[in-house]
Length: 306
Image (tube, rainbow, N blue to C red; front, side, top):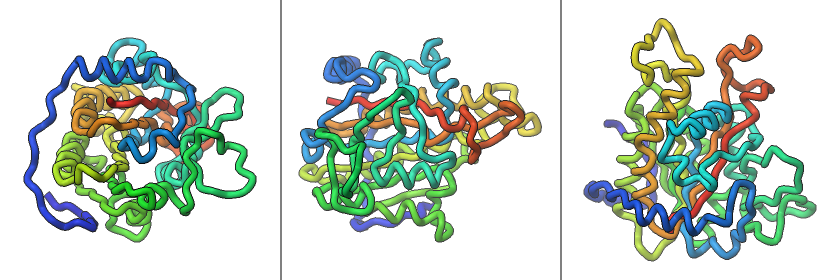
């Protein structure tokens, strides 16, 4: 496996075994978040410095598909962790991966779909910000990884889609914001086991993470992005991708994402969301980078692992 990686610490470390799932721990996580339902605000100033932060972007995931599968019990791992067992409906700041992640990593996460104001979790310091509230963690840097790095965090990116592949200057721009970054073709959109491969990389990162240093990690999950036809039994390359194969890809993610949560140290704030949706012949549209409801509306959740 070829790992296109950039690390400040180049020491190698052996793989560690998967952390076992523990229902009691997950119940404690839910109890800790019981009062922080969808749309609830957090005091990030009380969390930063004492919690790791995991940002998971489910690249291209549609809100309607995520909500339908959650309601039907088809994504039990995700719904177990989400406050109230449901996704929050939000609007993304970008209609494709690069734009959305550039905004996320400047502190502009998806905005709640209802009327505001909506104070942000993170914000760069600048005069006149109307979305910086008392609970917002304010940083003096151009981007969130740099701000958290100044606060003592080690910052890591495990990429998925092409904007994280570091094979071109554009594909290197987002990973370059982090102290350590990883991408392999096996983590990309064409590998049906992409999330499993990404989790294996996360496991290696966690094995060498110093116990006395906090961590900020971005995992960009590629599995939902086109092509995703191979996640639905009976689908073919010739038949292509569809809303149904997109849903099957989310079921694949749900089968493995619990392992990612198990690998995280406690306490950890998890932010999990889509960067944008995608169209499957919706009003004649296919794909994203368009101003359509299925693209701008994304699922969002946040919770504590304790």
